[in-house]
Structures are given as structure tokens and as C-alpha cells.
Picture 1 (cartoon, rainbow, N blue to C red):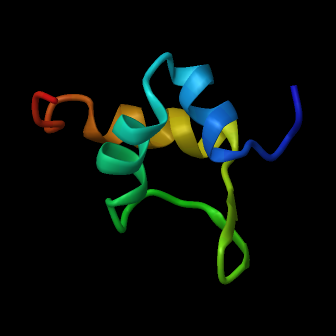
Picture 2: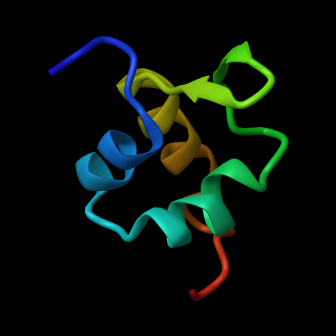
Length: 62
């Protein structure tokens, strides 16, 4: 697996739909990402797992 994940790869890694990934992860300002250009973001497994650990008890039901 690549070190930097696309939106689709990140959502697949977590096991959720890309739209849910947008709603829960990308919409949260605490979620770390690499902004490569105005319309291109990449995510690391480490940042995904850290965000889940941080929000584990506070994430709203989807």
C-alpha cells in the first residue's frame, strides 16, 4: 500500500464509503492531511489511525 492514500484508498482502508469518509473525516479540521494542490489531498495511515483513536468516544453515529 502506498504511503500517501487517496480519498478512495483511505475510505477502503477504514472500510467505509468515500462519502462517509468525507462527512466524518475530511470535514473535521482536526484530521491531518497533505494538501498537494487546491483540489488534491492525501492521507497517511498514521493520521487516520490517530484521528480514530482521538475521536473514538466522541464520533457521532453516522
